[in-house]
Amino acid sequence: MPGLGLSLTAVDSGLLSPLIPGQTKLSWFLLAPDGDSVAGTGVILPYTSSDPVPGSCNLEFDLDIDPNVYLHYNLFETTIRFAPANIGYSRGSNPPACDTEVGENTRWRLRYDIYQYFLPESDLSEQSLITSIQSVANVQTMRDAKWTCIKIQIGIGIVDLFSSIPGQGVIYSVIVKDPVLNTSSSYIPVHTYACSFSSTLDGCDTLGKISTRIFFTIAGLAGLFVCFFGHRFFKCELFCMGFGFAAFLFFVLITRTTKLDYDIRLTLTAVIGVVGGVILVMSWWRFGSVMSCVVAVGLMLGFLISSIVFFTPVGDIQVFRSNVVFWVTFSCIVVAVPLFFVRWPREGNITTCGVAGAYAVVLAVNAYIYTSLSYITLNILKRFLNDNFSKAFTDVPFQDIDFIMITVWVVLGVSGIVLQLYRERTRSFFPPSPYLMWLQERERRKTNVLDPSHHTSSLPSRLLARARQLTGRRESAGERTPLLL
Image 1 (cartoon, one colour):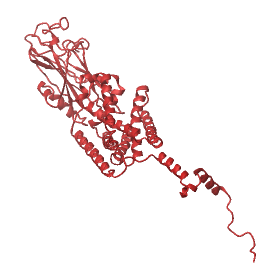
Image 2: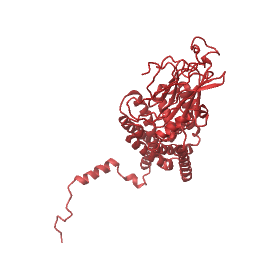
Image 3: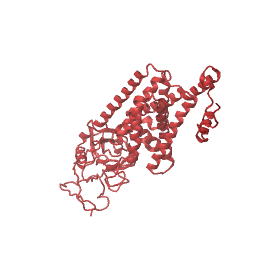
Image 4: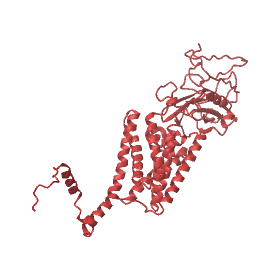
């Protein structure tokens, strides 16, 4: 068996062996730890004395020269770590010192590019993975359009964060470049699906929980109704918007403060969402302030627009790594949207119905078929729940299903907005408050004695009289006295 520092047991692993002068033969051995047959692929890459040596300045991992990339993931983020490289050197000579000097003739001149490649969505097959990994053996292929490149500076032990996408295959590869000699070398590519193939619960093949599918299916149906009929049925719209806000905020609160099971948290979230929807409806019913309710609804549109802005490459700009800068900018966009529509409250309300309702349909589809559009709001939720998520790169793949869902979102949203604007063009801007109408009717009945309803007894009196009729003994309809002729 090879000694310590010369062997490694891991997935996506590799070795780098320096050759001595005159050496023309080298043997490696590949074994499966449990003795089972496994599928794999092997690639041999030769390097010259001018090429950087990946992992040659290793100070924390097991191998003497470690060209591997080490990956760890959780629900929120994927972390990759690798040992720094050293500048190239010829056979038989001693490698340059790693940390005695900092200058252009040391390893500190090296630069690193991290490449991120997304496998086909919902494709968990071995063949797809092996074919993709084979393509990364050549440095040039990593510079194709399908690869996302992130440039980083040198460090002692280099660490970088990316947003986790459970069920989506991702390959990470690192290229170290020597800008002086214009050469480059590749670390060993590593892959992840951000889920477990061996887990019987929430494994890669069973990611969608039944409770999640039920929750978002109902939300999608409600969103479809709001998209086309929300303004017409104003109370239903207020309930749905209040439900969404209360549910989102409560889920963040209960997840950060408790360790309850996911299904319990989702159930409590639904209950609090119902309470939030009822409170928003009752506030309009009791006080009749349409403008305050429309502003509350407009915050939903502002939240979506702000989330879309940070879903784009804008979200990966370095300045937004600061939580203060991010949340201040995010909040300003959220507040600015309803303020913009204060001049046109009906149009703003209908626009919110169309955009938010159509997005709820997209989330419902995501419960069954993965789409990257769900990460528009999921990235914001992750940033609420995880303090370290601000350091993560949030790139997601855009493939055929995503473009289809963008089309569905746009078509539903535009159709709902146009239909409601056309249908409501001759109606009053907003329905009157039932409570204020009741007060006006009661005052009218008090002052208008010619109104027949003025002489109608009060509701409690009518209910009491009706109860007496139901419980009292009926009198016989027959005649009890003799007729006088």
